[in-house]
Image (cartoon, rainbow, N blue to C red; front, top):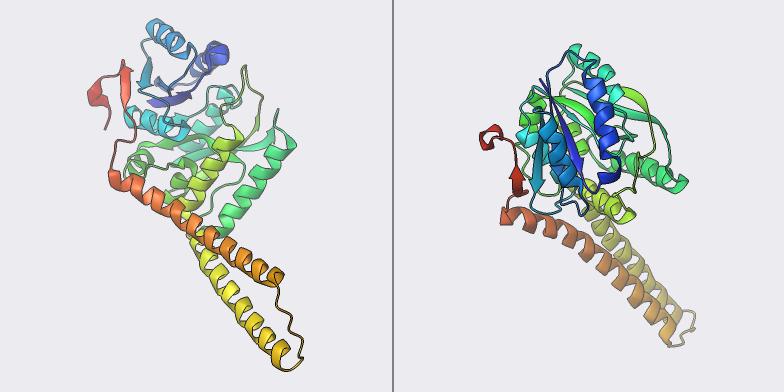
Length: 311
């Protein structure tokens, strides 16, 4: 059986058309399927629509989280409740076409543990978003010890072995595409053209994208801490030569005029580097604090799934 996990956040406008498209593609496969909607604290009528869809189809399930926990955690909740030996992760905004699942399933049949969808074209996205995404993935691969495929999102199929391994990673700041890459196993790609949204506006604002980028960097790299250390050495090196130059100008060149500019520039420069280092360290300490609290990753408000199904 294949479980299809759909994270939902304010998708009322385009959800019905996406479900119709997904249902059509499911009739073309021999796989038994369950569809799991994960309502991540939607503020519109998404939950009402989801319940109606689930009433009309016994293979459609829903999980209503107690509040908005974020996209990555919503997907994680769906994985926790999924029963299938294969689990497909896909957004419900229509940008990732369900028809690609057939190519992905064919690859799974060849013995792969993970098949991820790799974009060759991205419709309805600004040049800035494409440029920043391209730069970010290249930068991330440079500073981490694992290779995260470029031009991929969470649209992928994983098998039960990978899902079980993923559940052993308890961190609160989730970055699933990086975590799955870290796990290893046999992985391959299927190329596709990403479409525009069915309706509505994206919930992934630049603020959320920056937050996800920070989670990715701090989860898979100590590079920011190394940068703070190197900055400290660099400042100390520059400071040492400034001291030598000051002594040289005072006693050899006899060109010494006391003044505030050089003093203030030095203080501001060193202060900025110190604040940068403290900020980077603070990001890591914040994440340590979140994980030490050991709070639940998410809380379920209501669901029509048997509680014993999650593991």
